[in-house]
Length: 135
Image (cartoon, rainbow, N blue to C red; front, side, top):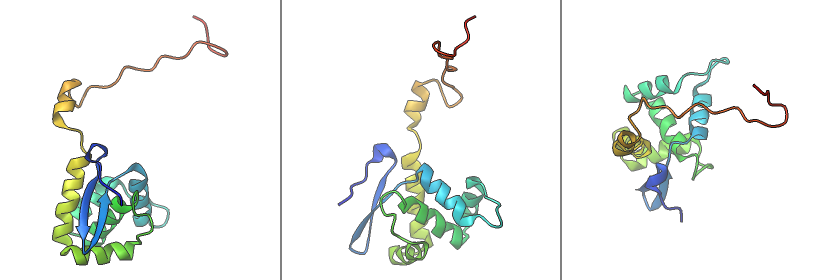
């Protein structure tokens, strides 16, 4: 049985008698973009999420499917749609996805502790060694 780890942005849900773990991962985002790609044009994640937020059911289903990819890779897009139906519809799943988004976002206290969202890590230094230029 897979258990959710909130520290990794995971959120556990139960649909019917089955437990699922939702998590939006980098690979899930790529799968989501590929799902909506047409004629070689790959949409931005922001545009897909906006479509889902605006209630476009195909986008809601796609986002939900993408959150299942890490722990439930065999669930198809169509099966994700059936799970949405079993869970109580798009509104119920939207609430789950909102929770998943919150779970995967950094804790505001952590952001504040490192100096805010605009803080960037220091620039990496070039290594010195074989092939490195000496100044």
